[in-house]
Each structure stands twice: as structure tokens, then as C-alpha cells.
Amino acid sequence: MPRILQLMLFCFLIFLINTTTYAQTKKLSIDDRLLQDSIYKSNKKKVLNFSMKDFDALFFDFFKDKSNPDVILTKTQFYNYTVQIATFSDRLSSLYPAQKEVAAKNKEQWLSESYEDYLLFKASQKK
Image (spheres, rainbow, N blue to C red):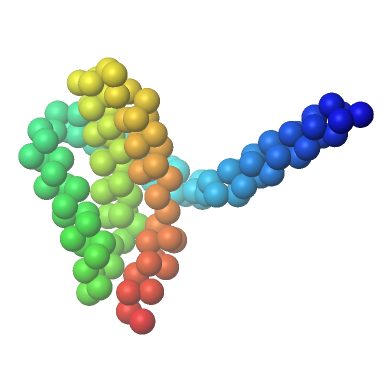
């Protein structure tokens, strides 16, 4: 009897963990995914040839524009930044094969950035 109770408790905990994990991941709309795909295809070669100096400039420009309360990026501009930063992870994974998993997670994180979340952030900046 205690074994069955332990098994049921374990299954319940796994279920709770999976539910909270799925609740945290947000799915982008189809339009946003299509926009990301077109930006990725048009910029892939250019970004894969970025030097660290080029990447740093892109990265800091994004955060400068994102944190500036007077600047609101368009959806295309926002995804242009995030997709290029995510694409640079492909370059890092090819340069540093031991860090391939970290680069893949980083790429996934950047591609999951939502323009709607960005707009909410901008609205909270003005308050």
C-alpha cells in the first residue's frame, strides 16, 4: 500500500511540474513566426559572418533602443534584432562545439521573444 501511495504522489508531482513548465512557455502567433522565418532566411548568411564586434554592436543597439522610453520599435525592427541575435548562436555553436547545447537554448530563448511582451514593457516604462 505505501508503494502505491508513493507512486501516485510521484506521478502527481511530475504532472504538476510539467503543467507549470508548459504554462511558462509562450507560443508566438503564426504571423510572428512567418516574419521571423523570412528575417532568418534573408539575414542568415550575413549574421553567420558577423565578427564579435559586429555582434556586440547589434546586441547593444537592441538594448539601447529597447530601454529608451522615447523609442518604440516596429514589429519588423524588433524581430530583426531578436532573430539576428538568435542566428548568431548558430555561429557560436559551430565555433565552440562543446557549447552547442547552451547556444541552442540561447537561440530558442531569443526566438521566443514576443513583440506583445515588448509593447507591455514599453507601456510600463511610461508609467
